[in-house]
Length: 273
Image (cartoon, rainbow, N blue to C red; front, side, top):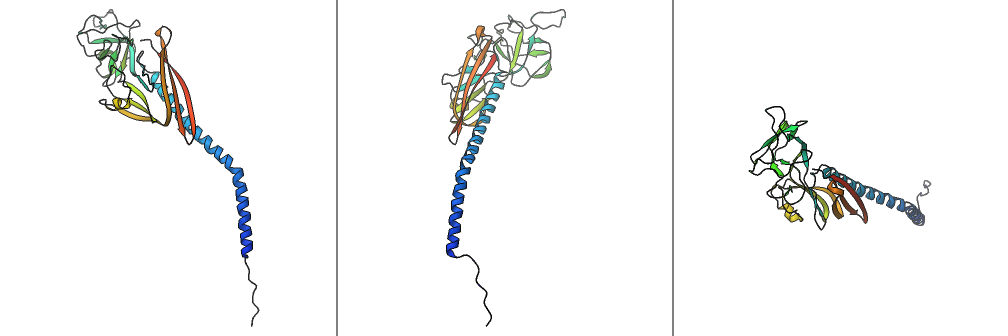
């Protein structure tokens, strides 16, 4: 008979020893790398939340810097912020000049429905309104149902003359600087559980909408989610000295996975109409 070959391989004891040693080494390695991995995940989460907060605050700030003077409203909760965006602006002719075709804006003739633009031509988008000297007070408030400072403007591109709907009642107050603004419909920022919403496309409301149900029920309204992971939100508004400017303060908090980032932001708004 031929000579047999010796058997090769691991014994059961050797296999168990290797498995045990491998487990010990794995546990030791896990102890050393777990904290750095957790720290990396936490840092990445905080960076994401910070980016969300910064993007939301900058978007709101950009909108507010183009808001109609004295149109910012904040409710008492205070989780609702409303304003009227300017889409174009310029100066109107206040007096007749040397040309017979000059068309000044009258504040005594309720049938007047046009005026010359002094300076660069302006574009009036469809659905816009003409506003003169909005003071944000009774009798001179753009939000009032029968507004003495707002008229429906006729749309057009590169206009050197602005036309608007005459109501039989003249515009209330002339602007000291002969300024006019062309505005769109109001915009609201609203805080909900987990989401910061931007509402637009709805008509002027005498009272500020201060609930999601009220905003959602408005005709023509469109809402878009500006940010998610929202855990806290507040807005505050205060007019500045002599009403020449105002300050909007906002606090936005965003949370995920036990991490919370809170951003405090302030925006100056021009209140000179």
